Image (cartoon, rainbow, N blue to C red; front, side, top):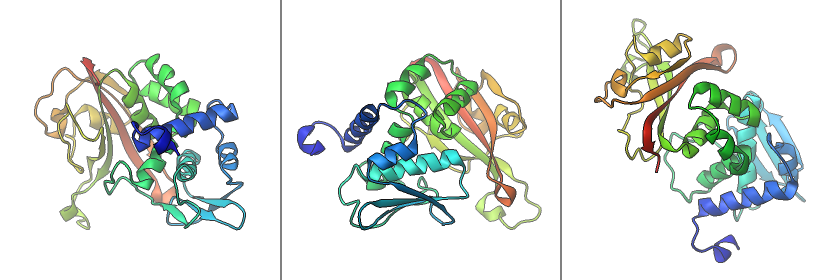
Length: 280
């Protein structure tokens, strides 16, 4: 129906429209309640279970059942839950059980892939444009702004940083880094973990250079200081990742800790901007 009524739009744009109408119909404000949105989309039951996948959506006799991984943090479960709701915006969701994998960014997917579109829906429901965009534009470019917005919308700092960067008017790059090893170093008891790039956004990079996964940061740079607990907001380039001089950048970064017990991890979230250069 959406494709017939709005042939000029992409599937992602149509999904965003559906999400916006749903929030308006329910008259909800952030943080958007997952349970109410799910119930409205004929998902009256949300179960927390131990499972390898982050979430699933299963057709039952009269409705749908959502399962979320119990070991995930509440904010990660919220994103996964809205992702599963997003499948109900697409055809065929009542025909088979659908899963969201643990790390969906490992494999690049086309823009019209059902999982990609479900992620679009998750972002639009978790961080709805009507509320998020004006709040982001009224904020300063800082990691503190990201944390404040994440708390306001009950979202993860990482998801919030991507959404923040998509609305920020200047050219912006988001990096996620974690201590880790090169492939050949794994299992080597004498190898030392280095702070390495896990992901970079946006894709495609456009005005930004390509930054390979596993690219390591120098030991005495701003990113390393963030790993040691310092909240960073200063002029800094990509040279500390071994890239060519990029000059004139501003960096804001901070350490975040995730998981529990043996699964506990340290992660640096870093945002760069080119002051005065348009994001478009």
